[in-house]
Image (cartoon, rainbow, N blue to C red):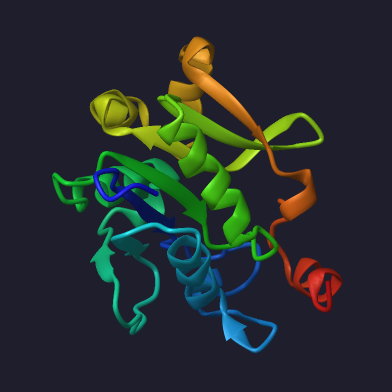
Length: 192
C-alpha cells in the first residue's frame, strides 16, 4: 500500500458461539486462538490499525485496539457499528473480517486493499463467483453502513442496496470461506 492510503482492519469476534457451545474467538484452530488468527490475517494483509470487537467473552489480544460491544447479543450489526466507530480518522477504508473463517488468507486482504487503491469504493472477496468475506468499505460509506447494520447481517443490507459500488475480487486461489459454526466444522477444517 502507498503511505498515504490507510486501510484499517476490523475483526468481528463478539458472539457467544451459541451453536458452537463457546465463544468462537477463544476456540483454537491449528494451535492458535481464532481471534489471534484473525488479527494475523488483517495485519499480514497490510491493515493498520486493527480493531477487534469482543462481547460475549473477554480476551487479551496484544498490539491491537480491543473494543467491547455491550450489545453483542443483538448480532453482528451492532458489532460492526462498534468496530467502525473505533477507527481513527486516518483510516480511509476498512477491511471487515469474521473470526470464524480461519482459512481466509492475508492475500485476500491484500487483494481487497489493491482494489481500493485502484479506485474501488467497496470490494468483496468472492469464491466460486459468490460474494463472501472479507469485505472492504471506503470511509465515505461508513455512515450508511452503520445506519443499515441491524441484527445479525452486518454490511449485507448496504451491499445489496448498492450493487453498483461493489467490486468483486476473486479469491478462490488464496483461501476458503468455510466457517466454523459447530464443533464438527472445526474438526472437518482442522488440517486443511
